Image (cartoon, rainbow, N blue to C red; front, top):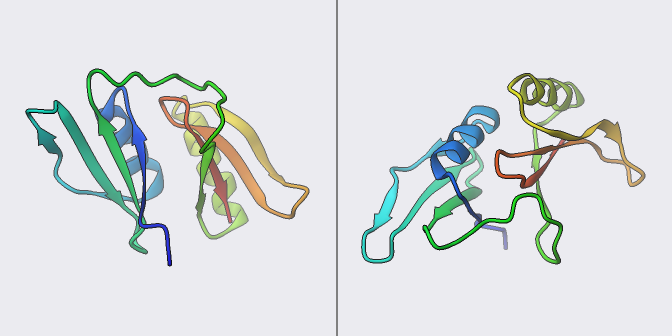
Length: 126
């Protein structure tokens, strides 16, 4: 078994798509739009086949950065400690929030934590 995709409700689906494509080497499909439901989505694909679905409907409101029970973050492996550091700095220079500086955690992970444009947490790890 494997996780096929995760889905994220978005306030600004185009901004979110640009962010994920820019920093995580993803490919995007063409935008899907269902007129009757006013629903739009993109599937963004990693080279290994895992995907992120970005979704938008006008009546779905996304709470920015509020801690709630449930899914809390996604982790993206970038292959090396140097790449964790470099990507964290690229995200910082682009003006996005760094929530946790690169470090080795108590359980042995080397990671940083960033926020996407809508406040979703992403761990960048080896």
